[in-house]
Amino acid sequence: MSGAESLSVRALRFARALVVGSGATIVDFSLFTTCIRLVGMTPTAARLPALCAGASVQFFGNRTFTFRAQAGSISRQARIFVVVELATLLMNYFLFRWLVPRIHFLAPELVSFLGTFVVFITFAYPMRRLVIFKLPD
Image (cartoon, rainbow, N blue to C red):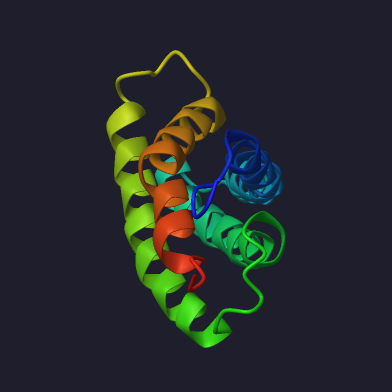
């Protein structure tokens, strides 16, 4: 298989992305819940700092563990990551705002999980794999 990755290699990388994403989600969820339940912020106001904290975990976890892209330029990766992550954060935030009144029977934390997962699968993971942490062949 010259040039083509096996399904097992791709599945393992995706599994590593899920591990990193789980860690980022724990950070995001913890801060989000703390802001809502202890600080008294509204869910929509609490979402932004939680997303930013999770994004920090995502960058370093994906660079070192998921994509093993340490050989790439960290400054290039960081610049592209910031741009892509800003788009990701906006998508997460606006999807969350759209979902909250429509799925009002679920706790905001669960609505947040749903929105974040949709954005991850459709935008964030593909951008990280194909653009941010793609190493030259």
